[in-house]
Image (cartoon, rainbow, N blue to C red):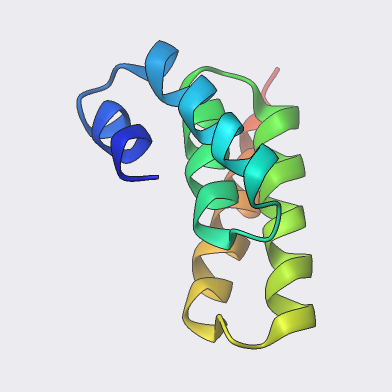
Length: 88
């Protein structure tokens, strides 16, 4: 996760995306990873993928209630992707 996050902060999305996707293959319940991948997809213009990861993160948060502080972040990611995808 940390390496993908570092690539993201360095704006090297091409390296960040496969790293975070690899993590999710190992741990498909990692809410932070879904939120990071959602953000990576947002900056890449992949708004459908951004929305999908954001919505999945919300479902995980709702099911496991151990991540209440992430709920706002996940809702914001989904809301942004919805607004951006409606642009002409």
